[in-house]
Length: 317
Image (cartoon, rainbow, N blue to C red; front, top):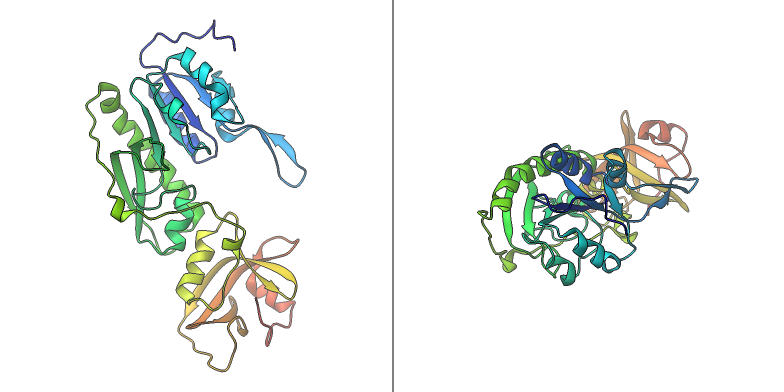
């Protein structure tokens, strides 16, 4: 790679590594106050129904700001490029790969990460989803040093936020990316000056928020109403919770619990059609679906779906 036109001597030399939309406000916040010498992001991939190849959200920022953008399949492919840039600090946020030790030791001030949880809670790639799915009342953002083990490095700073009863993964995502940007900008001066704190994580308090699997998306009507509603909220707006009606998928985007008891019905059986949706029997009561998406169709109000189907007596699986 040709670095002739890149001035790598000015201090500080910052490299940013990130990929999805969550990373964009963090990167833009850095660019308002510092120069970023290079951006590393995942390779472009096909998206949407037509499989059009598009740049990652972070790459779009790199292109807009004429910043060198590296897109290796594996980080080890660009170790020499990173060495040539002589970074003082590498900042990562939702990059999408575990960084090897060979990279972590390159920057003079280390590698730091913006993680969307209050570590050591919810280590892993989907902390926002799991904060809601697992019934957390609060979460937050952690600025941390990176280590070989996933999300296990020393904590530099943290800021918490309450999870509202009506929060979804989408709304919480938007709150946390702004919280992360602000906390990083508050913390960076001490990191660059070498005066920041380092707090070891308490391994006895560790929980995980691993990436959502296909199996995680399916609703289980033998579960409690609280857990089912939390899963629906925690998978909205991506990838979405679903159940089966007959042999067709029905995604569920919004719901609420009631105190109604239907002892003579099976779990998963439709209980009643209401003005705002339709009820489903669960292990300890009823969950009312208010927004659904039949397979191959757009989202709709659950009451509209119910009006076109004879639901009473049907069992969702």
